[in-house]
Length: 324
Image (cartoon, rainbow, N blue to C red; front, side):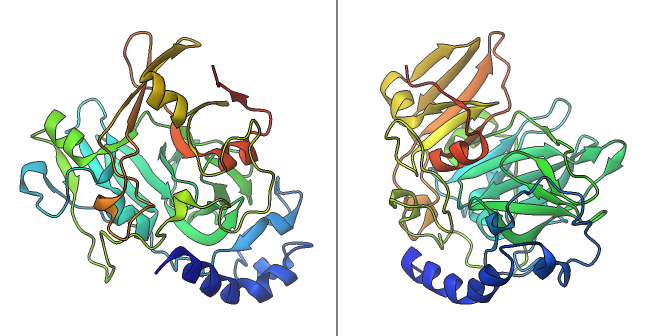
């Protein structure tokens, strides 16, 4: 499906919801009777939109299996994957060809419960520790969007969470921040070259067109999907990829030009070889957008995100744009 067809289909699906839910959350209470809507940081409920699918209409993965990297034959070299390297565990990676259709993978690595998340509309791929105050949460996809970013929910309290910032925004756990782990998106070729004995997530047993991109041409669009907020400053294109570290952002244009940037005590490096997951019909055939690694002065990987500029501006309106 081309992006224009997707937009048209989704607009029909959400038309009634948008007009009903813009003043208060009463519309959502029918679908979410166990969510405490009195406890929230959302001030303007018009920001919450249905993305089309209902609660769990995009099925998060709770049972994730892996195969040796050497046994994987379905992925092509440039396909994007999210890599998790935790001390004491075999390095493992989660292909975007699967996360595009599931958006969340709940897993446990060396005793650490994690949620590997990917929001296609923001290009945001973040891994969180699922533990909050001694409780392990299990995350699902709410079917809601805010600033075109996925709203997750936890099945234990049915609180809503903003994926791009890992923070509870509605319900019992409002204001709680998840711990982001230092994982990153890279190409399949990069992962298997560095970790020939590593693990790769196996294909889920769901009837999905894995490897296909349902958002053809999205990251070369001029406007984000289901977004009505302010566009980024400094004439930065809305769908330019930026590297976010805390509340700072570096554009991919600058990274491609300089390749290595050391600034504010961290080093960002860029190299060619990773396909955009949001370009061509086949994910592995997407144009080369490259891979970024973010490290501290000691060479340790740092938590970060590669997201679109509009999303950074939406969630960090006072953020620091590192343009030079």
